[in-house]
Image (cartoon, rainbow, N blue to C red; front, side, top):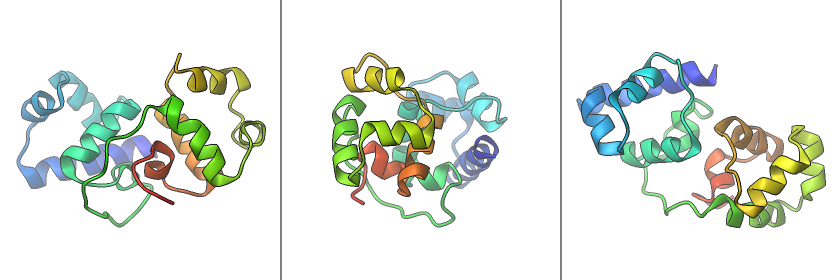
Length: 146
């Protein structure tokens, strides 16, 4: 569902801006095949690419992913590294890592990798966290305040 909605919204933004896959790929620093895979709903973007696309089209990641129906167009500050954002997120939401692990069913070791900066979370896991905390993906990423 998210993948198809993302593809639809990306296509709509590209139509509105008259960007084709090649020009958008050049502007985002990726291959044109990557953009075409997104448009065909064959590939979920990384968190980094999702933010780049949202920034380029000046939309929220939540709108781009189809999690919100209204686009709040604005410029966002750069996202902090997730290893820095994650402890602040837990603190701001008043939840322990243990409780978040139980709610999301994301493993302790994976969250440990995020905290150490060894790995970055997938977009699917960011969405799971946002749903568990009843907040936006943009908030989880540190693009907006609660």
